[in-house]
Image 1 (cartoon, rainbow, N blue to C red):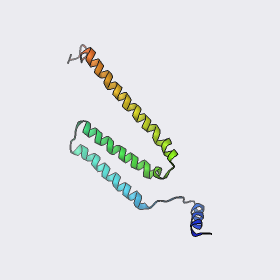
Image 2: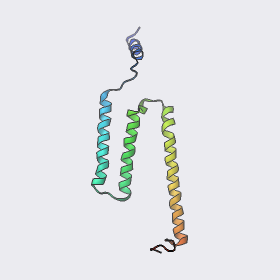
Image 3: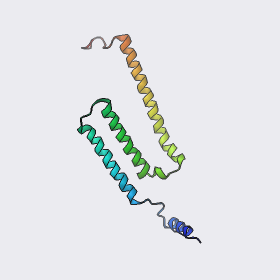
Length: 124
């Protein structure tokens, strides 16, 4: 029996399965720490408006992606399994974006036709 065949039999027989070097996990942990620090820096720098929320969401998505890819071992899974897990939330994100665009359009039409504030409001 060849040396690689013997190693694969020993690995499968021991019940350990596939193991990844600890350095990968430490690097990802460090990267998560840096992304968290950057997320806190958004508040520390007192950024406001769309820039603030865009950066917070960007850092959140990057951290979530790293956690799913490495710590949940999605990086090493088959493409079909990745699509089965990641495609539904992506579709929901697209639908939420479309709903937000439609809500903005509807709000604009209401302001156009109803003149801004409702009767009885302090601004109207």
